[in-house]
Image 1 (cartoon, rainbow, N blue to C red):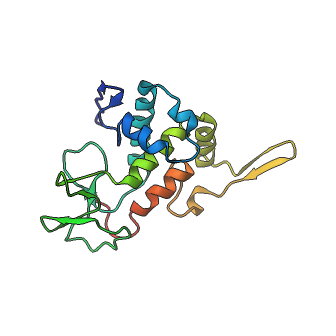
Image 2: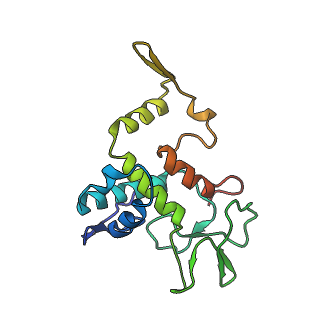
Image 3: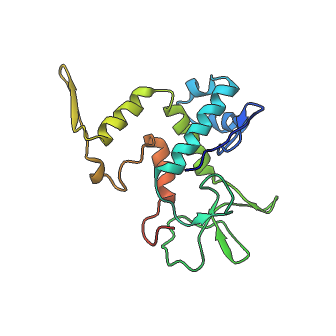
Length: 186
């Protein structure tokens, strides 16, 4: 088991999918993030780092890491030798390798905007521990809950498409486009 070493620099933590300034810039364009954006730079950096770890652990993704030594799952590319149905449109080819997101100005692979948005929504969901407790209860087999006249019934995680990932609903929707649906696990 490897341990992730992190460094807090300028309100950002090395290894998160996006830095605090980028999160704030994107976050103001998205609804429902007032509580997240009100956090200090240091608190927001910690939440973004935790959300990045959640995204990486949520599901198997199409393709492989762009670089063997990168810490996170993204950016990614599809191996040319795989016979995997590509669900996501490819952005560019670099050295004959299809890459999902490519910055032509810097000539480098980048983390997709969809992943950055998912990271922001997942970070926001971490502010409400009741959501995490409910997901844990469902993952542990809770079929429903009742309080007075209110009642909730949950689907079994095995009945959900792709299973229960542990991501909040909004982050799940943004990340689902990268989910490995067919082909070998890498």
